[in-house]
Image (tube, rainbow, N blue to C red; front, side, top):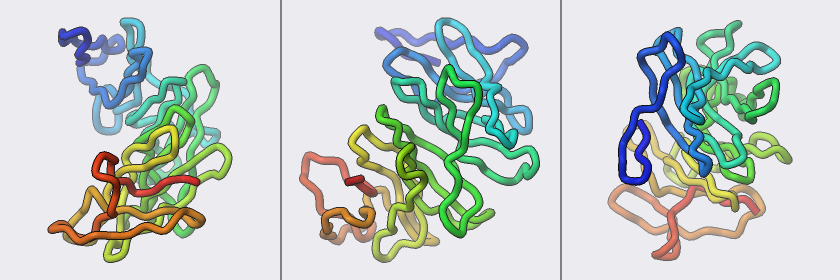
Length: 218
């Protein structure tokens, strides 16, 4: 579905499909999500009154299971599947107009990734993990590749869900029994941060009119 100019309408599905979802939309009203479910689920682009399954794969054949985000330049990020290792989650990226997709890789010691957000400057964020283990938040760029976002004190896992053009990242960090949407950590070289205690745990002290973030690039 799409809500536009005060009205809700259904987005078209590819021929033969009866089930679909949408997760993100850019300034040009190009939306992304997926169609179908289970092993038949595929990432899809909704644009100009039609829907197109993302058929472009990475060099090793990994394909889009679902698309979670799209920026104004048409960079799409999401969850991919490696057909040679179907249980492996691939943090997959596709730039509309290109012939192939690519993956962001995984953090050191990890072998999986999920890409949840993308900025208009091309940053990609998500979570990287080893097999079915706990996720660790990351930020990826064309210049630096995949970089871990350090965890805040008292947390053991996390995920980055969105990033803006300046490299500010938001998401969650937590432990085995709880997640905190306001914990923060910054990459090496960033300015020091201070923390304050809240009922949910340790959260960063930020300006009252600024969002709390996981990390900021420098």
